[in-house]
Image (cartoon, rainbow, N blue to C red):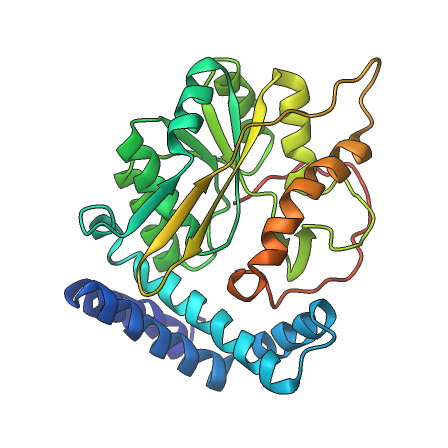
Length: 301
């Protein structure tokens, strides 16, 4: 039987979301940071432990104070990201999104299929309003949150900006291939965690075929699509630079593709951007344990 806390949680989330909708944008994101810090500090100590562990791996020369400053940036980013769902419709009208490389991306999308590699830095949901503003139709792989309220908010936000959601399974992959063959833009997230384990980037681990890095390369091999990395960087409270990367292709081959080599190649383009934004990376706290290799084909966002 569902306990009282589980029954109350969606109601509390809905109330907090309503408060954030009513506040001015920057105060709304400040409130999101406050709520997130309180929740993590009191209820989710494993998040802090995981983030500290990984930061010490990535920054072995940092002092304890420097690590804690990065923890603060991590919680700040997560809190503002959560709150920004409530104010997403305001970001473009208030001049809070700065587009870098959008014109070149639009020209590339008009010339052929593009696999947009979304990264979980800054606020990746800002690409919904960005693509809508640019009048570029977008389909995106999407792994629904378990929490019903969070799922409703995420799906409602993407729907308002016309993002077509692709299921994280074989059906979604087939639909992505169909869309790419129609010269459309499909977004997939090669930086991801599943079950508390980071699947990508590799961060020194061996290439594997379980995650979205592998799926993205297979989509490109099937359709001839080029890649473009799309990531956002936070510039203060509720302000972002959105980077639309220069399109690139997988290396040309003769014969059958080496899927592990393709994954390593794509990782080499994605990982440096994630590393440069580590304190603001959403999956900072997840495990960096090696991933057992197989040919799993699930997708997610």
